[in-house]
Structure formats: structure tokens, C-alpha cells
Image (cartoon, rainbow, N blue to C red):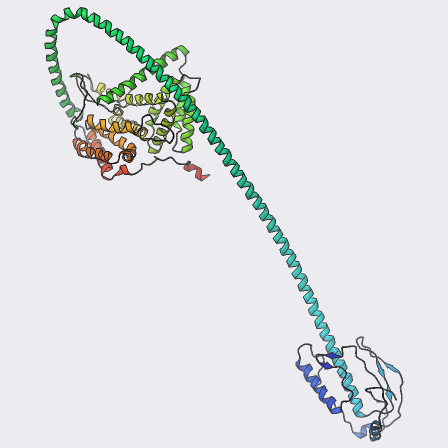
Amino acid sequence: MGAVKLELRSPQNVNGIAADPQPDWSFDNLLSELDAIDEKLNVTLDFPVPFTKTQPRKLRASKDSYRGTRGFVMHVPDNEIDYTDNDSEEEADHSTMVSGRRFACDELYISDDSENEMPLQCHLMDKVGLAEGALHELTHELQLSVSEEVRSKISCLETKLVNESEKFASSITKVDRDRELQQERERKFDLQYQRTIAEALDNHLTAVQRDHEHISQQEERRIRDDAAREEAKRKEKALQEEKLRQEKIKAEEEARLKAEMAERAKAAAEKQAAEEAAAKRAAETLRNTAQNAAQDSKKTLGLPSSGLDVKKEVQSSARNVIRASENALELEKRRQQIYEELSAKNKDLKVRANQDYHRHGQHIGRQIKTISATVENVRTRAEELVKLISSPGCPESISIQLFAEKIVSNCTNQRSSNAIFATSRVIVLVTSKIPLAMDVLIAELNRVCIYTVPKHISYSEDEFKTKDAYFKAIGYEEENGKIESIDDYVERLSCYMKLYGAIVQTEVGGFQNLHGLREGWAWLARFLNSLPANLYTAVALHSFLEMAGFTLYRRYKNQFEKLLHIVARDFLNALKEGGSESWSAKLSKVKMSIRDYIESNQFRKEPEGLQLRGHLESNDFY
């Protein structure tokens, strides 16, 4: 007897289902187990179902179908033990159903054409029943289905493994790319950080170098200041010696004159009485003439002569028409003497050197014209002017006179307060190192504008033969034989007074203003005490207050407000309109401006341009 032994290449257990059922099962149990396997295979989603039975197998056949036929009876034993007696009995029962010979095929090798199935060992039996054949068929189908399921599961797992491998490779590539990007970012960040450090270091070194240069400049400036101070002391000492010498000569001359007068005293004694009488009569006549001339001037020129109560007024004779305080006239005389001595000295130097120094004056004028309201520009212009004045190529006295003349002539071209305040700062910086330049500059201002003294000249027919002579005396300019208009004169007068007001109020840290705020306060007091109220004095007062009023208020507070109260109460009330229509309109306008300045407290507000800018506004566009 022989049997066919089936062996599977697939695993013996898949998802809890055994490939080889238990050998001692009954046929009904086997059918139940096969139905359960079909249900599980149809329900599970782990593997696709390769094969599904549409109709149940018919395991029973009629006896007629087996008649006359002969074939093999296959028996698949569960073990290698021979059949029992029960098998013999079962075969006897079915002997009538199976006819034919019984073959025994020992060690017969049966193989399938499929590459995935293991070889089967078939053992031919002498006799096999219908149940055993059906069981063998079911077992074979089960093996095929399980093999197909295992093959599908393996294919699915392989696909998942390939997908996972691809995902892992993609993740590795992405991680590498991210790491490279991170390294690139870190490299750029390091480069930027190094660049930032380099820029900071460069800025620090630049700042250190600038500080060293600033310290060096301060040291050089201190040395120059000391030298200028020593030079000023030396010049002052020389002037004093020259003054003493002149006083000595004058004393000797006076002594000689006294001796001569003593000799002539006897001859003059007889004529003294007659001369005194004649002098009295002449004085009375001149006094009456002056009064008549003042009344005529009100009608013809529109020059109102009424004014404030005057505390001090210089009247050396009946013909004297100058109104000013004694102190102001003395200071003006002293400065005028310095100016004339300097002019005479310069004229002698030019003659001896046979040069006119016109080119040197152009350089000074160019520096003055390029002054602007910035800290750096003011400092640069002041240093350049000091160098030009101290230049060995031109005597210092000539340079000082050129500096004063250029400053005064250029102020008439400056309309904005910014430029005037900047010019005043340059003046203070230059004159703090060259003190003589301040006296010469103020003397030049007194010469071109009598109201900077302050003083006023009244019109008199005896003193001035013509009206043009009077106009020239108070500062009118003549061009092509024609006197300038009132508008031009008033405009120039305002420019001169604004420059003077800017000078007296300028305060620069570390530098001394030789004509500072005390001089401005004295000017205002002398003005109100001595000068009359008319168009010229009103314009001079308004221009001065516009430039110096804020600083005077900041220094003197209530005292300054009291002076303004006097201006509003006495000076403005003394301004009487009269004369020509043009004169009256200008007087009304300036009177309104002064009143508005006082009533709106403009003196409490800092004037525009008083503080210098750090840089030019045009630099913001670059």
C-alpha cells in the first residue's frame, strides 16, 4: 500500500490557521474547519482573496457512476502506520462502488509545473474511499489557497518594504539637504557677524582718531590763545606807552601855550569885556535860529523832535545838535581814535611796502561770505580768518581793518537771522583771539551807523548848509551824486543794528565776548535816556530787540521787562506821525511792530537761528 505525502513550502501557521490539520479529525470536523477558514479568508483584509468557491463541492456520487469504471484509490495517511481493521471494513463497505484493479505505486514522484510548490510524494493505495478522495482534494485546494495567500502577503510586505526604503532614502536626502542649508546659513551668519565686528571696530577706531584730533586741536587752540593773549598784552602795553608819550608831548605843548598866553594876557585884558558881550549876543542869536530850524524841519522833512525826558545830553555850544550820553560819546571817541591810528599806520605800511593787499582782502571777504549756520562751518570759518589775519604775508593791522570792513559791508547782504547769528559767532571766536579786532569792528559800525553808539543828530540850518549834508551826517549814502532813498537807508540801518544786537548777545562756551551782554544793556539804557523818538530811532530799537531781546530777558529778567514797559509807555507814545505820507506809513508800521513785540511777549521766545544746526539740511538728501 502506498500514500501521497504533501509537504508545503509556506509557513506551518498563518494568522493562527494551521496548514496541516490534526490527523484524528473526523470528516465533519474537517468540513466545518474548512468553512471557517473560508469565512476568515473572506473577512480578513490583510491579503487579497485569490480564489472563492461559487458552488459547494458534491462529494457523493451515484453508484452507477462507479460501475464499469476502474481507477486509482488514493489514501493520504496521517502517519506511516498501516491501516487498521476499521479501514479494511470501510473498504469492504465500498467495494461494490469501486471496481477495477488496485495498483501500488511505491515511491512515485509527482511534481507540479509551478515554481513555487514543493514536490509531492504520492503513494498509491490499493483501495481508497470517496471521503478520503474528497479530503485529499480539499487539502490540496487549501494548500493552494494558503500558498497564494502567503505569496500575496509576502508581495505586499515586499512592496511596503520597498516603499519604506524609498521613504527612508527620501528622508535621509532631505535631512542631508537641510543640514547643508543649515551649514550655509551658519556660514552666512558667521560672515555677517565678522563683517559687523569689523565695522564696529572700524567705527571705534575712527571715533578714537577723531577724539585724538579734537584733543590736538584744543591743545593747539589753547597755545594760540595764549600766544594771542600775550600779543594783545604786548600791543596794549605799546599803546599805553604811546599814549603816555603823546600825553607828555601834549603837556609840554600846553605848557608852552600857557607861557605864550601869559605874555598875551595883558593885551587881551582890554578886549575881554567887548568879546564877552559879543559872545552873549551871538549865543542868543544862535539859540533862536536853532529853534526856528527845528520847527521848519518838522514841516519840510517830517523829523519829529519830541522825545523822552533826557537825563544827560551833551551840549558843548549853541550849535551842538548831537544827542547822546557822555559815556557813549567818550567810548565812541576812544574807538574812533584807535581806528584812525590804525588807518594811518596801515596807510604808511602800504606806502612803504608798495602793495595794496587787495588779493588778501578778497580772501578774507570770501571766508566771510561763505559763513553758514552750522557748528562745523562756523568753527572752520573762524579758524581760517584767524590764520589770514595772522598771516605773515600781510601786516596784522591791515588784516584787522580789512576784516572789520568786510564784516560790516557784508551784513547788508544778510537778510536771514540765521546768517546774522552765525556771523556774530565767527566775530566772537576771532576777536577772542585778536582783541584789537573787536574795537576796530565796533568803531567801523559806529562810523557807518550812528545809532550803534547810540547817538542822534538833529537837523540845523546853521550846522548843515543843505539837507543833503545833514543826510550824509546821519549815514545816508551818495551814489552818482544822488542821495539814497529813505527806504534804502532804513533797510541798511536795520541790518547794522541787527548785526550789533547779535554781537552783544552772542555767548560761546570757552570764549570771551569782548563786547558782550553788559554792553547791550548799557546801549539800551543810553538809548532810552538820550535819543528822541522818531522813525530812525524806532527802527534801530526794534532791530536791536529782535536780535538781543531774548538773551537780555534771560539775563536781567524783571529789569528788562521794566525797560520794555518804559518803551511802551513813553517811547511809543512819543512817536508822532507827521511829515510825508511815506514817512508816516513807515513810522506807523514800525510802531505797531514794537508794540506787538512787547504785548505778545516775543522776548520770551528764542529767535530763529540762535542755535546752530549740527549739519546742513542739504546733506539729508545725499
